[in-house]
Image (cartoon, rainbow, N blue to C red; front, side, top):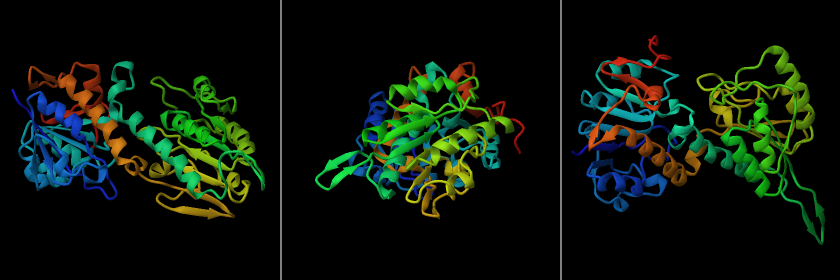
Length: 372
């Protein structure tokens, strides 16, 4: 049997990614499924309508949604698109369930099944479906490129007829996927890199990339590999150790995040004022409040010659590769639900249960059942 799978054009400001790319859509088409593409959905990711093969182009988002059994998106579709879906349809995307849940609840009560890709469990079996990791890879890379572009100095040591330039000193805060990619990128550009993470287990990965681990004596790793919030005592201990390293840094890349919570404040105003003029802080966590007290999302703040950069939606700054990885994540998840050509949502499957927000006309995810 054939499943109608729709690819919506993203409507969020500045969003350039697309939920499937042509090669992945082609595989689904070859498997016998009907692929519907909203006109222009892939254009900003380097995939204009004419390069898509064996797909039906639909000009209007709601009109596309009305024909879909499965609707794929990068970000939450508009209320208008969600309302156009037939009862029993499935939406898979980055649905941002931690904010403005009423819209999702309305869709759930209308009989729409919702899978939020941010909630895919961080277990070995689901690694190939983890959009947080795939998109963080892009964010970590782009953060360093932004720092290199804005900084008044070069990253590598250079010996020239005009003298020797010392390498930039970079500190990466947070050694998750984004942080590790930032470390690797800064090292490739020739910087001397130190890294800090409140999960002591990150040391081996940090050092394998040629960076030095900053030891503050704090370990706050939780089950699943996330970092918990620090106690006041731990925060003070961390701040004292970090302040010494930041004062000597030319570049700081900050990546610490807690899912569903505001970003932890790690870099204080006092730390920034102690840094050297000409230093740059790129705060990847800007969208959730920032790791630096002075970060403003979407802006560059000058504090005594120290630039605090708050970029937003970094994956969209490399939309072709970000979309390629996202598409593979989504396709791998779809593979768990397409059996003998039919869509089967197995609520007993650990991966599906972990990211399924609604099914059968109600919110089913334990974290969001009480949301109003």
